[in-house]
Image (cartoon, rainbow, N blue to C red; front, top):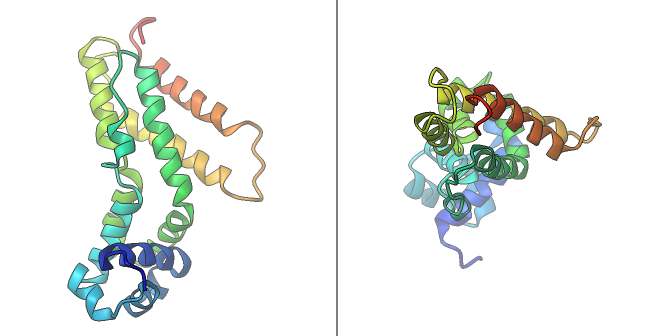
Length: 197
């Protein structure tokens, strides 16, 4: 048995089981067995399958990671958004099996919608919104822009790119890095005030 604490083992096992078996197939018994603990331990640590799912999603797309904390705010909006997008893209690519399974299961399991969508789409969102607000306050971007809308549009573009680029049968006409750069250009050029960025 692993020397890792039970919570850590349960989170790792639950991530694998949810990605592999979906919300219906991922039983607490299967997750506990895969983690090498008993089911009682799972419920003692998490309380319910729903709370476990919320922790799995938060853990898989953790926006409080040291990587995020290392991204400084500079005087260049494009560079800052690029740094955040690279982290977001990496986390999504790393967790693509979990994302695909969870999104596919949401139609049948509306009760888990908040945990799943918050986990996938909230990653880095607050930091990116704060950065766009700062640019707006500094007069770099137009006052009329709504930072949350801008960030959600950028996240949607990156999400689409990750979904397409991780399908083995999809052949892209461009490099992923070019798509990301074009997405950031569209956003930054679209919100910038004059030639200032």
